Image (cartoon, rainbow over all chains, first blue to last red):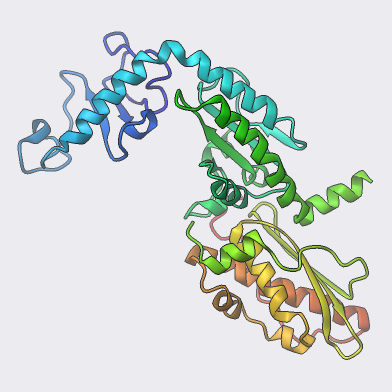
Length: 218
Length: 142
């Protein structure tokens, strides 16, 4: 059995002597390691095909000179991430503050469970606006976020995860995902809470869908 | 998404946003499922000149910028000239669009033509032109 533990590392305790998996993969950039390095755990006795034939590096599975600085970076990031697992409640507090504030915006909805979610994950859908235009404004304000909107991806498809969660296409377009960590400060959270509502208001005011809602409410 | 400076200018500072209560022609195209809806309002005088033009758009940065540019390009011109507005003219005026966003410019052209068709119907003039469909459903599963 193989597991993709990219979201689990640094969020839950993983004991490979207990966990009944043959292989486990994780990615460095989720835990503040450099982008472009990952890790594959292969349990002793599991045989896999070589990915790149040639040299003897990485037990002949992946030939080519190893990127040592990135490997050291990933190892250090892993140590730090695991050591900070007991402090995740502080991240959860900030997450919950963000969720509370953002779901107070009219016609918004939290995607996913209120408490059974990653400590650093916030995902809120806003009706009558499109995600990419929201991201562009956030980017101008210095906030890096992502959206389930089709328009922000090269494939022009809405997030398959949100769609699988039962979020309809038109609502997936207006979803906003914010990822916070131990490095996120209370001031960062305040700044997002201050910055986002006027962006939503501005975009809704130029939306023909919003216009219909406002007329109905009158 | 990397946009040209001109696109970002029209996105952050869109021209002619709003509604015209007593518009002579209104055109709305696109659908929410695909993530883009454009609505264009035209005020047209007795000489067929577009004296005012407003838009409202639900969509990405490119959708907002193409709507804004399209209204700029037709305002003050005759409906006949407005009908000659092509999506490539909108793209050119915006100093280019990423390839996946070109359909937004097609939507803008379509919105202008739909608004003019609405005006023609209102004054009893036959709609003697075709409106190209933006093929907006491409890549989206039902």
